[in-house]
Length: 358
Image (cartoon, rainbow, N blue to C red):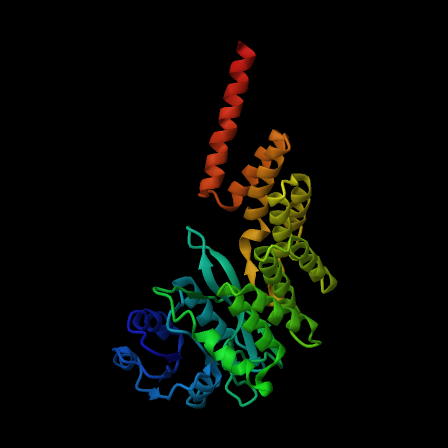
């Protein structure tokens, strides 16, 4: 782990991880609170590393201190929940030593019932070898090569407070001024940070440059289409907002996330039949988590169902609208929208029965 000023969450993280770890290595990059003291409750391997605006450098330093066969990395606001600790321990017992990289789920947003609403696979456990080292000053990653397997032991990300919202953008802007650092991945994350900062024209420039680059990961390119669509929408360029979503279909079969965005745009134009088409298409999209892209779980069930309820209600097909609301309830039974719709449809039936009696 690399940490800085994490006294609020570090104990929670280490208490959850200690039962699965044979060795704990903490690299402090300049804390001014009790972070290092908390770390020493769990390990004597606490090191200092001067912060250089380079996450990969700090993480690689932490890996250099590891003595075990594999490295598992965590952030301070990560937690290994009890059920996942059991999965981690089982994974250790059954692990074939020929495995080089283990991709595991990273849960980073949650529904009210604490089931994950947004997650993706990360290269969570890697061989302790120079072949597996971090790349990228920010949004750093390890290239998963060799014998790569997928597992079910998840790490859950529970933030208590936001981090510096401008830190990553500052680092990326420095990288963009260094021609040697401008990789397709850098362009993608730079564009995404600009989008998250509301700098939409600049985000479009960076993401369109990323799209034109012959390199770049296909899942990032598909996600870039979604982000570009939102940027064009915010810039008042409605046609481009549609076009760039359709552009993603040149890369692979439709993703539910893209189909839901098309449905949303058509709903905004009151074209409910077209919106319904794309939401129904979203429901038919396979859930392909092993592709490694960002997964918005609600796009594969709840969101298209609840929106189809609205679409068909607006189209006057109350029976189909209610059926889709019931489907939405199977995905999220505690959803306020689902519960409100049930009241609405019950009232319609009651009013209809009353009219028949009169």
